[in-house]
Image (cartoon, chains in turn purple, red):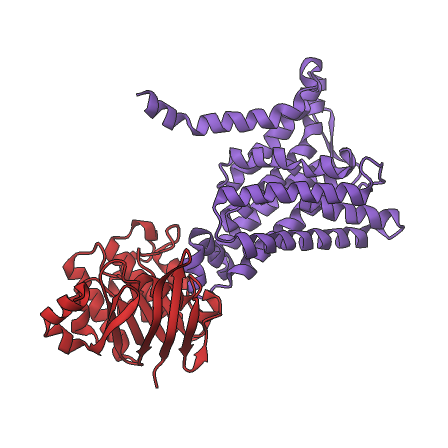
Length: 289
Length: 230
């Protein structure tokens, strides 16, 4: 029982990261109508800027800032592609484009970072925050969950209490009507891409030391992130937050059970399947009647 | 001098010409009415003017400044407002939030509520829950708050009760009387002509008549002939 609890708590860091990446995915979807498969890859690019600078002997925190800036720039660059050439495309076309961009970013990233070549990823927040039920809860766990909760609260406050937030909500509802009112649609869209780029980069910097820090592994964290976003049906920030943390806990617990631990990477897919079936239940019921 | 001058304008859809070599002008303080049967190119004309679709050739100028290559947002900031057909309210926002989206420096929500006092009691209601007439009032008021020089209105009467249409028409006339240049595309020809100054009739993407609204209103046979050709 204690082993299960330890594993569950160990899954909290991953859960916090899934939650933050998921909340960023919902933010992007709600405001610029893109199911963004490049979310984690954007953060990975920024994280590898940190790694490259750190390995080259630069001090840690300036390197972190440079990495976050790089993640923001990559996010804005992808946002520019999406708004400039695919602004009027359907949601499915936009999603397909981000899948293509993900493949391209991973290919370039693996080439530039030496594929499976081991890297020295610094731990930004080492150590334990507190003990819970006899289990050490790391600072990284607390921080990722805290960051996800903070982003959720800030997103709500920003969207509901500022003029820019109001314009973003209008833009999400009817992009052309918003543009016809003189709203700077492209600039606002790039702001969304830049903000999510910065947050995902910081989240991945925290989790990278606990994962195999190669470009592909980190970029594919988008799968559990989108599973978390799906739990929130790409609308609710709070349900996405809970979905991400829950996913991390379940993955953590699965790792302590020998018979299922080797299948734990399939858990996000099972969640996706379950949520899709659940969300379709009314249509299936209507059809059956 | 005309506020909006459109010269030799051509607009294509799917590479097929929908508006061809069209010349129109809209004066400050006046309503120019664009009439025509379905498929005449009226909505395409407005969408080309506001930048929703690109123009193939020709020029569009507000106060002498050419805007035909600018994005819709830039055209809006140059003083062009477009009330699209279909009552394009921001559905998830309340009435007041819809208005606040288009608030510019120098504009005031009170102007919108003065034009349509009906909206005051509905200001905290989600726009998707407003009646069709209220939604149309909201999009016109919202456009007004961008401080336009030229207002394009597309089929504002579609699907609305006659009493509401009359109310909207009188509000548009009031806006023109306050100095706004209005280009009104409308299916209810008689009602539009009764508040308009200058009438254009379009057929197959071309202007086939350019004249005084009152004269055309008094010649229903002429209007019928212009609509149907011959």
